[in-house]
Amino acid sequence: MNEGQKAPPAKHQVTNPKLLLWVLMIVYVLNFLDRQIVNILAEPISRDLGLSDTQIGLLTGLAFALFYTLLGIPIARYADNSGTNRVGLISISLAVWSAMTALCGLAQNFTQLALARVGVGVGEAGCTPAAHSLITDSVPPEKRSSAIAFYGLGIPIGSLLGLVIGGVLNDTYGWRVAFMVVAIPGLILAAFLPLILREPRKAEAAARALSGEIAREVLSTKEALREVFSSRAFIMLAVAASFTAFLSYGKSVWAVILFIRSHGLSPGETGLLLGLVLGVAGIIGTWLGGMMADKFGKMDKRHVLTTPAIGMFIAAPILFLGYFATDWRVAIMLLVVPTALNAAYYGPTYACVQGLVKPEARAIAAAVMLFAQNLIGLGLGPLLFGIMSDAFKPYAGDESVRWVLYGAAWLGLIPAFFFWRASLRLKAELKSG
Image (cartoon, rainbow, N blue to C red; front, side, top):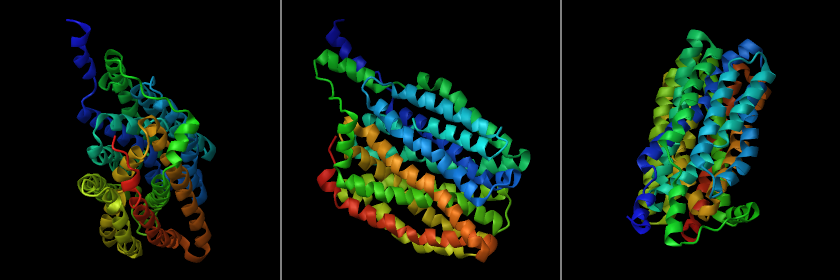
C-alpha cells in the first residue's frame, strides 16, 4: 500500500467527538467540584479557623481567581501553539489542581488555606482554554453552541456535587476530609486521560504533509490579542459575561450562607437541597441555552444570544422574590427558574468567542474571556459580597447577607443589556469556520 493510500486512515486517527465531549465534560465537573466545594464548607471553616466574612470572600474568590487569571493567557498561548499537546496540558492541570485541593484539607490557618486555594487556581488555569480549542477543532460551527454548552454542564454538575458531597462529608467527617475525598477522582483521571483522548493536531499535521497543504499561520501574542480586541462583539460579550460571573459567583457563596444563617439549615441540609434543586436547574438551563442558540442562530446569527439576553431580564425580579422569602421551601422554589435562565449564557457566549476570531487565536480568546470573568467575577464577586455583608452587619445582623443578595438580583439587568448589544454585531463579525 503506497503513501497516498495511507492518508485517509491518518486523517481519522482522532478521538470520536462524542467521547471527547463526554471526557472533557467530566474533567470540567471535577474542575468545578474542586473549585466550588469551598462554598458549602465556608461556614464551618469560618467557625473552626475564626474567619471574618471578608476572609471567606477572599478564600472563595480572589485567592483562587488571581493566579487563575494571571496564568490563563500565557497558558492559552501555549495551547494555541500548533505543536502543543492540549490533552497532555489538561491532564497535568487536572493533577495539579486535584493535589492542591487535597492540601486544602491540611490547612491550619487562613494563610495556609489561601495558599492552597492559589494552587487550585494555578492548576485550573490550564483547563478550559485548551478544552474549548479542542472542541472547536472537533465539531462543525453549526453545532458549536450546543457542544460547548455540553462541556459547560460541568459547571452546574460540579457545583451540585460540590454542595451535596461537601455538605454530607462535612456533617459526617468534617471539612478537612471533604477536601481530601473530592481530590481523589481527579488524580486518578489525570493518569488515564492521555490514554483516552488524542490530540487532533497530530493527524491534521500528517494530513497536511501528505497533501502538500500549507500549515496554519502562527500568530504572535500581540497579533492574537489584536485579533481578539478588534471585535466589538467580543468586548460587549466580555462585559456581559464578567457581570454574569460576578453575580453568579457571589450568589453561589452567599446564598448558601443565607440558608444556613437566616433559614437555620445545616451545611449538609443546605448542600443537599440547593445542590440538587438548583444544580438540576443549572444543568437544564445550560443545555437549553446551547440548543436554542444553535436552533435559532441558523435563522439569524443575532439570535445566538437572544436566550441569555431575555433570560437574565426575566430572572431579576423572580430572584429578588426568592431572596425576600422567609420560608426556605418557598425561597428554593423561587430560585429554580432564575438559576436555569442565568445558566443559559455559557454555550452561546463561548461559541461566539470561538467564532469571532481566527483558529490560531481561539485558545487565547477563551483565556481573555476567562480572565475577565474570573478576575472580576470569581475574584471580586464573593469578596465584595462579603465586604458589603460585613458593612451591613451593624444594621442588619445575620440578615446582612440577605440585604446584599437583594441588590445582586437587580444587577442582573446589566448583563442582559450587554448580551443584547453584542447580539446586534454577530451578523457582521461571526466567522464561518
